[in-house]
Length: 133
Image (cartoon, rainbow, N blue to C red; front, side, top):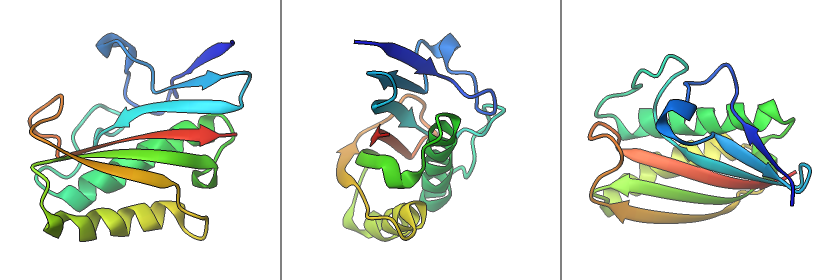
């Protein structure tokens, strides 16, 4: 099995934290993307306290990783969405951002998981994905 780490120069640097933004498996057939949070390319938090803004940035980060290998959201087959202190009222803002991410493409399978906390206390959401390229 071949593995290739994907770490776009236009994103925050993940290697110091011990992970790659994605790993391409089997010569480009499967891309496993690390959970993305609301960090911009400078490693600064986007949307403190704003779930929708953080979801939008996390999905933008996934889009950047996909573009690095010539993919698009239409190639995503699986999302896992982690939400801090999830309640049903948070579904609307998340759903709107996920729908915008996929646009006209058929949305991927998605599991939403409520968690107590993420890696940093300011993160409200983290989204990881798998794509078939």
